[in-house]
Image (cartoon, rainbow, N blue to C red; front, side, top):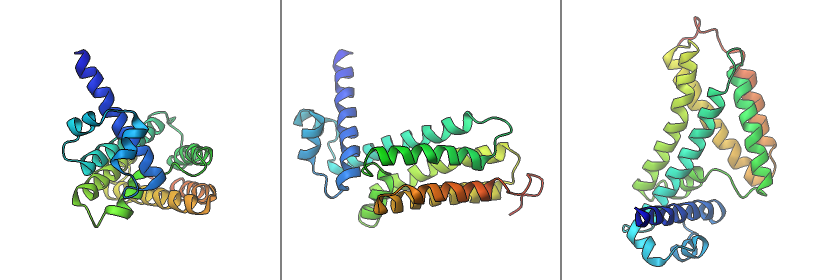
Length: 204
């Protein structure tokens, strides 16, 4: 059991290091030697846990990112009051994301978007894990809107559009080294979503 725990810790360190380095240097700019140095894991651990190489490690790193952002979304939605509008919830969440982005000196954005832009046409394996990540973020927002009584088609479209707008705003904020695009997205989403049609009026 101890060996398994130690092995799991090494695997987690490798994936976390890969994730952090992708955010700073991109996928192509992150080599396995850099991951080993950053993680402090032995070389043997890398090839034991990720025998298929860099793509397998990248896949695991992106899954970590997907889980982290999904937990952030779910936590924000589950903590919402019964009278709190979806736009207000999203605005509060994006305000927190903007603060994290600024605190990281614009180095920490969304690694999924980084890999999707860089490798989406080069690697079906990485494209697929990016697609799954976006779906894992869209689904809880869609479920929340459905639980509030909205039409299924409207909930799906709105959830998907919200994730797309936030992802784009993160990219522009990093490019400008300014959180204003992210805050603008939050303001726009609140203005739109908090005047959304009443559930009984929501239609395709």
